[in-house]
Amino acid sequence: MGPLDRVDLDLLEALADDHRATVVALAERLGLSRNTVQARLGRLERADVFGSFERAMSPAALGFPIQAVLSVTVHQAHLPRITTAIAAIPEVISAHGLSGQIDLLVRVAARDTQHLFDVDARILAIEGVERTETSLVMGEVIGYRIGPLLQLARGASARAESGRRER
Image (cartoon, rainbow, N blue to C red):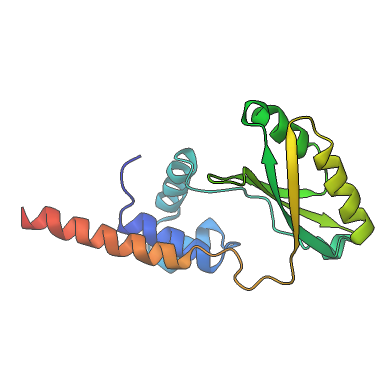
């Protein structure tokens, strides 16, 4: 897929504003046909523009009020096996591979501090994990957001379009 055009960015911005919007609602909002919106969404999906369609749920509402971020250091040769083992731990919400001194950043949810201790122990018990460092999540100060990036992309797209017209 090539660069995102104005219609793509308008569609993505509308979805960022209302992630539950139907194709018909998006078409009405953007002044496009339903078929155009559906085709664009399909093309964007095939290009892996969208992340997970899984609804974000509160771990606390499920009985896991404590969240923590574990910085995990591993033997690099074992990284694929370690990430598979970590993915099998149900309390793991997400994990990211990092560059630098920390290899993995793992977000977990737990019922209480003892449960968190047990989750950490399970991760430490995975062969190839050297150490973990646990930080409690005190609260989310900036939630997942994409709107500001869409604005940057819109500016870059406009500059590129302007440059093409000037040539």
